[in-house]
Image (tube, rainbow, N blue to C red):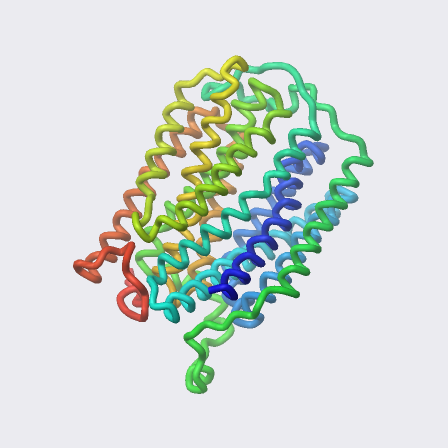
Length: 446
């Protein structure tokens, strides 16, 4: 357990340092590089490349390089994006955004695959339930990963603003960020931040290279299996072939919802509620509240899942209540504490979506981990792209109704997955089943 936990912590802190850097750049991109919409364009290109990467690269790189070196090399793609911001132009940011996008899907897929293999391996040796251990590992990961609150603190301290605009669900279709008299920081501060961000990325890569063990699945290849190994093109198309599994198709709405709900909080709540009523300088502090609750709940839910099973219903209630309240609420600076209640509830729900959905993928698709997590990143990224795509085109109340509709659809299709699993193994609850080559390892073809 100690060796496995060490590896989980190495990955967790590697991602902590890497995304402290990337998260800071992402949150300030539209403000730092606002000329001709360069910042927004770079993020759009980034997520488009991420979707393309999710379709093909993860299974190939993980099979060829292994999880450890896929993670290390993919992290270098994030460093390239930090370097591109030192001299921000269309000729530096767009290419480095493409590089980051191409590295993003293999990075996350390799991380999820590593944690799943490590959890399954330990569970088999210790005679414990694989799902419980995998959920605990994802809980530890998201505890550390979501602790990178310094990103949001930097966002708050970098900009100052004043003014109030028409705020809330029925907001004006204006860019409130640009109407709050924000003062752009000096070049020296920008270069200092970029230097720190680049250093964080380098530290993340070194942590993984030096301290992370190369992992081998207990399902080691025999000589016959090596001879029968899938061809390059078979591996290349594994992400799409995985869609033959009916369960994967049914999980698409739930996976996309993860992108929708994160995109709404970071792109819409912060702008049409917080920035509009309080000012942009409070965005970071509000997001710290989200990250702190998310971090603590990730560990908590990972631990208690062995007693309670999956808690999607709990997250459904928290998100539904928040969405309805946001539709009715008229934000005002005098209601200061309320601005922190919503991100706290959102963080609680997001902890469920992240830990339990990742664990669900690891358990349902243990025999096809690389392709499954590539699909996870593909559909979650598509959710992000759609959410960011209509962010400036629709009023907040329309986006809230869309979010609520996707949430309801997600729970319906997730219920169908649980039904299929219960039917394949009558009398055995999905939350307590262990995949050892039985019903879980068999694809349900459409």
